[in-house]
Image (cartoon, rainbow, N blue to C red):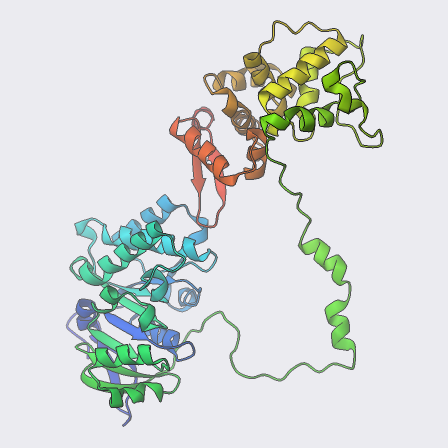
Length: 504
């Protein structure tokens, strides 16, 4: 029945056993919250879709969608789909604030993210909705599908920080959200896996088919049924639910959910005829040019470079790799002469009298395979030997200056000329020697407009095959104000250099 403002107060969700319409009082729902439970295939998502379609345009709707099932609401009802993988954590929080400010109906699509990323993203989004300024506390339905992911009863494989974050967000939504205009609607496949303090805050229930005794008993407890009556839950058909609560009915009532206008993106679940093929034709379709297709789809990745060797093994491991062509001149270099001549030698110093410079020798060392992973002391000894072979005085080059020359060479700065090289060198002033090579590569990319080095390249320049060390490197440079890192929930990272961005 319409109210004076023209907004329907009751939304039709289906029919009862006698054919009577079963509705939900929208105003009461906003004040009392709803819990939906049903095993996979019970029609739980269909029920949520029916509810959302029936009240679309009457109240703001915010859908947390881990499977991407509800993005089709955008086509029929104008919901804005937020692809969570395209935004950083700070942008997700800002989007949530704007959603409340402008009363936009949105679907937060999390299906492109890994499970832990989904949990963190949803938690940040819900927390920002909850923390919106008081002047934006408009009424809104907040639907959280697969709620057992975001409010788990047990920690499982989730780390403690993520679990605290998501439980806090879900508890705030269900316990304290009403005063901020947020009406939580949580849906779960397993009541036993949903945190009890989240489930207990709902006053309205729609219970679908379930077979496990523990879930059936919890559902019966919430509906006020005894154990014998609880058997009804096991006998429910797909799309049938038992409803109870001030927004639905004061006594448990059965409802067959009505039809919907939109559908999920998933394929049809009905039986369709299998394709017909002649004998051997199907096998040919599966195996034809299989090796070629596999090569194209999964390119071979080079293994990560080896970690830096232990100091005690320095001479035995590093020197033979760098100097296979050197003839034995002293006892420590004896193993070099025994190296097989067939092995492909790395770039080595030009012969005497060829006009070789210090920078060229450093560049040859830097271009050798695995050079960045060797200790600076070993590289410096190699540098001194090559200088002696080329007849170049190197006594004025100490270890500190050599490390900077090596960073210039391995990052590619020594190949740049003129004002660009001067500007990059000036911008890198004050950066520690061990951070210099990766930072120079970032500066070069920013100045030349080329792509920023990826995590593997930064690791190579930093002399580490550990992704966590690379992340700590970027965090450190960001804290120093040297760079700005933006990483979205899809794992895509972008790096900018503030001074260069400002100049541009």
